[in-house]
Length: 262
Ligand code: ACM
Image (cartoon, rainbow, N blue to C red; front, side, top):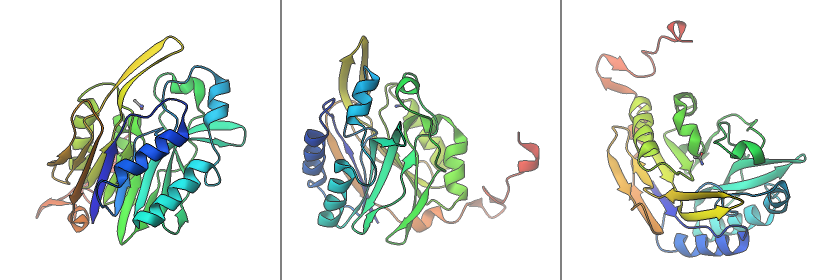
């Protein structure tokens, strides 16, 4: 399977422009599975609930998800992308999964980071694993990386690769935790981060790039610079993520002793 990500610089508050830019970047390479950053359509630094209400969209019936389905049909790919979702009078920091056949159930970020707690309701969907082209793909969003339980849950549910849309602000931290998540679950991870700065409503954030794809033995298969948009694609053999043995004696999942864990 060919897996790729787009590292991009969304323009705050302009979903149409961001969608067009994402489409241009996706056109640079060919992949079966693509990952776009967290909140790629809206930008990250919200300054009011009014803005959130204006920019969050229904999924799957909002314009961003509908357009992404068209892009998935054109490219014959699956795309995992972070969007602001509006549902039942609430906003969620969500990830949509679109395939040429349509949108799959949305994932809503379980672990909200910092001021996201002002704007978004905590996720209320399980960590999803879906099948596309014979691959089992798990989804989590950005700060979920700090909670080993998220990746573990996806792994135990059969994920061979974790698609990880992100808006990271600490350089080098998630790059290390996601390498560990890959190693401890013996699966692939693909983190699509954004770049650029946003200064709005008294908050200034610089996003730190360094998007990456990691193998089940912790090898960096693709990585991007800290600054600048970038597209990377790699061929991966997802069957390498199926066997959890690290030697003939130890299977990372079969050897778990949950009766000793809290
Ligand atoms: C983050 O979860 N966007 C750091």
